[in-house]
Structure formats: structure tokens, C-alpha cells
Length: 309
Image (cartoon, rainbow, N blue to C red; front, top):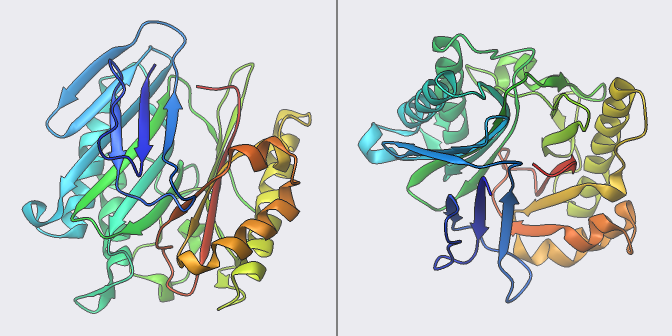
């Protein structure tokens, strides 16, 4: 076992496994959620400060937590987190990040004239550039979700071979957003496709954005429907790249972030319309309470598909 991410169960730990406990609420009453990342062979664990990793030589799981106040603010925390990650990857057998999950405290709140998410984007991009990593075309898949914590948490999966970065023809690439979205554009691709005989698709946090504009403000159902139009385009692009129908909307494993708990029933109903009520996707989907990186967006959906890590 490479590692586990545990939601809504602060006292849960898995013996002998690198475990990250995340204080995000699972919206299904009485249910906690555990994301497991498995390895094919024996696993080696390492720790350097607040960063921990586990690798089997072909895949690597890791996470870092940075206290924002101690770092000197969210921008500095992002620089510190990613500098630590890239240093660890450089000395590991798995130097190529496939996917990042960023949990940003109070993501939509203002700070010194900018939204905190935009400060995070400045720091993240600075760290990518300082490490000579792809901050634009070729960047890994990612998401950024807000919570009420005081600690920036980033967890990630990396591999021994570089992935293929995928973009969505319905959307402007995030790293090409115009200046109205902040001094530095977000650093991620819409999806990453791992290489090898059993490719795996990592879909970034995806929302109701067409071009670079948010669509359907105030309507969580329409936003969910638009989000699936974007997810469908990414699945189509991934299948075109591998030359076969390896990925399908009804076979992906989804995490759905919802800003307002009151929207859960309507978002879930539209989700089931999109993936099919009896599908594997419907059985395994997890719905979490989280703040999306744009305050007008009510829903964000991410997905993973393919052979288990």
C-alpha cells in the first residue's frame, strides 16, 4: 500500500500505511471515505520535515502540510510546499508528477486586494519555475479546493515515466487565462494520462467553465450538466490518444465537491443522470463539502480511471 487519504474520520489510521487525514465533510450522512493508493511491490517510506512519501519504484504517493502563519502567508506556503515536493521528486525514482490535490484555507477570501486563491497561484507558479518544471503546457493535472483549516495541504501521485498532458477543446487552457483571473495563471493541465500498458487517466478538478468564463451562476444542476460536457470532452481526448475506448464516463471514479450542502440532492440527481444510476461510477462516487476556486462556481468534479495504482 502506497498511501491513503481519509476524509471525515479524524481518528482513523491504517496500520503500516502512509495516511493523510483531511478535515473535509463527506456529505453522505454517517459515512467516511478512504482513497487508497496501492503499489505493486514492497514500499519504501521517507519523511523530510512535513513532507512524507511512499514509493514502490514505479509510483509514488506523498503529501506535505504547511502552516500558513509560520510560512508567512498563503503565497509563501505554496512556494514552500512545492519546493519541498520537487526536491523530494528529484531524489526519488519517480520524478514525474501525475496529479496534485491542493486544499487551500479560505480559498475565496480577499487578501491584500487579491483573492487568496490568486495568491496561491502566484506562489505555486513561482515554485514550478524555480524548479524548472513545466508551469504551462505539460503541467500536471490538479485541483484546488477550499476549506476552513489553517494549514495548506498538498498531496500528489508521481511516476517513473512522464505523463501526457491533456487539454479540453471547450476550454481555454488554465495556464492561458487572461489577466482578469490574477497576476499568475493557474498551473495545471485539464487531465494527465499516465504511460504504460495500462494507462491511467487523472482528470483535474472540472467545473462549469466554457472558454474561460463561468457558466450558469446560481444553478447547481446546470453547472453539473456543463461540467459533464467538459468531462466528456476530456474522456474523448484521452481515448483518441490511446487509440481505443479505454475510458468511459460511467466507469470513472469521481469526487464531487459541492459548495452548499443544500444542493447535494439536486447535484447527485444530475450526476446519476450523467453516469447512469446502476453504473460503477454511481456506486463509487464520493460527495464532499468544499469551496470551489471561483466563488460563483457551486460544483467541481474530478475523476480517476484505469488500473489501480
